[in-house]
Amino acid sequence: MTATASETFTLLPDGSSTSALGFRAGALAAGIKPSGRPDLGIWASDVPCVAAGTFTQNAFAAGPVLVSRERLNAAPRAQAVVFNAGNANACNTTRGIADAREMAELAARKLGISADLVLVASTGIIGVPMPMDRVRDGMPRLELRPDGGHAAAQAIMTTDTRQKECAVSLDVDGHEVHIGAMTKGVGMIYPNMATMLAFVGTDATLDPAFARTALKRVVDRTFNMITVDGDTSTNDSCFLLANGLSGAPTLTDNSRGAERFVAALEVVCTDLARKMAADGEGAGKLLQVDVTGATSDSDARKVARAVVGSSLLKAALHGEDPNWGRVFMAVGNSGAQVDPNRAALWIGTLQIARDGVTTGAAADAARAQMHGDEVAMRVDLGLGSGAARAWGCDLTEAYVVENSAYST
Image 1: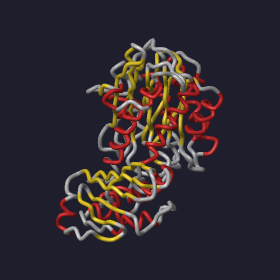
Image 2: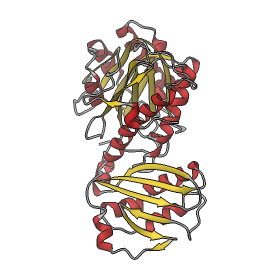
Image 3: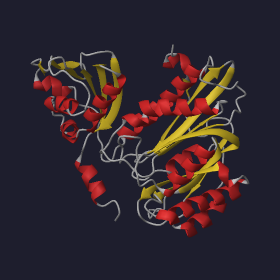
Image 4: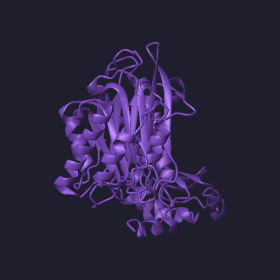
């Protein structure tokens, strides 16, 4: 039985990716971004970690993704992530891979560790070679600090308008364990993570197999359940590093504290997923969609993602237009098993449809449920016990303006 969130964790008010014992980070402006803002950094543990990762499924995976995936497939070990913003190092063929490897080597030299223990993450414009002279110049000037998580979160931003961080503590067999994380991503979000980088550090001791399954389980329920624009990036990477410095016993799939740890990890990643959806490019509203009554959780996930991903519904959300037919349109296009005569819909607390037809709720009352910067909808399919939750945002003029001139 999974512990409830309140039983599992304590939210750390100033939490960051360096909240767990033994993690440090540093960032600076190396000149990769034309804006002159911070764009190069390292996030590292004082000791080698058990490591796991999930990556984009885009066939044009960037050089950093290929290098990091190869290293984690070879051995579930890492000690640091070197990262940059402003250049995705994607669609650069063999040069991109070579540049990613060199970034790892430069970071390893800075830290005094093996390059095989360094993962690489990049975000920014696609198809432009990495300005390695600026990386080479900036790397020796990096200063890593235990309180450097906030600076690192700022340095991975591209079109993000705000930093995205979260950390919690929990008890594992009498030991205080911390999970701290940062992420970025506000566009190209669907269906498997986003144009996102996510770094999650913990001082728990994790069995490698448990680390992989825990991360995949949580990513499937959080980062894989957000959408902004229906596109999937070339650079999506989510890393989990566990250094064991809390002294807590090793967690495996069968450990007494395993479910508590996974629940806390999900709380952290849910918080970050919501922040990414709310900060979607040009977004003014966060949309949360709950689906119940599906024949399976898998079908519920299909429906939830179809609803939050519908451009027509996203436009209606922006205009606060309770055009509920667009919700059922998306449900019907999801590929899930549905019965049009059994579906129900709520906008906020107001039931709009029952058995596939309108309840006759007043338009003004429905519109009032769409005011504010967060809107909730629930679809019940009336077919089973499957359930899922997804997050998205409205589609605004600002999204078009931002993406019409991204490379210029």
